[in-house]
Image 1 (cartoon, rainbow, N blue to C red):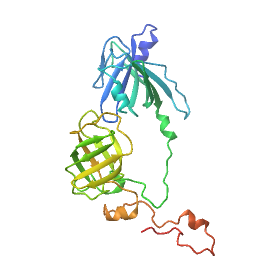
Image 2 (image 1 turned 120 degrees about the vertical axis):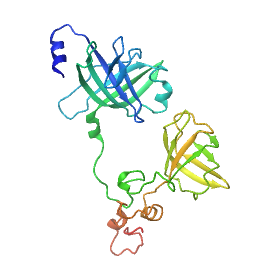
Image 3 (image 1 turned 90 degrees about the vertical axis):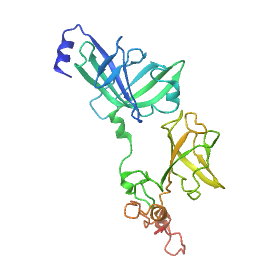
Image 4 (image 1 turned 60 degrees about the vertical axis):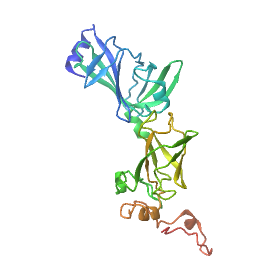
Length: 292
């Protein structure tokens, strides 16, 4: 807390407001405040007409997760029900500030974390705010197994996959059930090239959303791509998308499809569980080991 804000709070007659800065994973930033006029600091305008309010922040001195929640009205000018349904606010970064509203330079950061579970209904939404300690709940460490633990696009994979040969942009021809698409201008790649790859929407109502590709087939001059799940926003014929080559994690795919042996990072020669449990007298060709 700044010394000026500390001195202001010590007077007993305060002029403070709470502000929230929300940054979505696609980089879009929102500012909200419970003051009756907009406040501006750090290049963000914190709007006063959003109807957003928040409970007190629960903070601890140990490693338990700090949390709170925010409640707001759904508004076309701020947070829309369509954006929440599409998942655009999932995992968004959030900062909560205590600000002297007539001197915004006097402020204190009270909470930093991310959006958790979001519920909506009756024209409003409630979102759980999770503190930085939430990240300690994620499993860490390295798993040793035959397949690669990294995927194309990860810097550790060692192969640039954003250019020609691995990534292609195309215009959707037809849409079935919100997750099956046909393309007339992607015939150069063999069938299955994009299976297990990334499907990202570049234009339209679903712009910025991503999904995993389940099936990639070539039927004559038409390519048919099916996703594992529907996108959480409408996608229409004519929208442009980007598809990235898929990878099943095997050593063969890394070597033959991506020319990546050095940075494979898997262990194709590691014995499997069947080898560890096999009786010495048992004759079997399923004893783990190399899968190359």
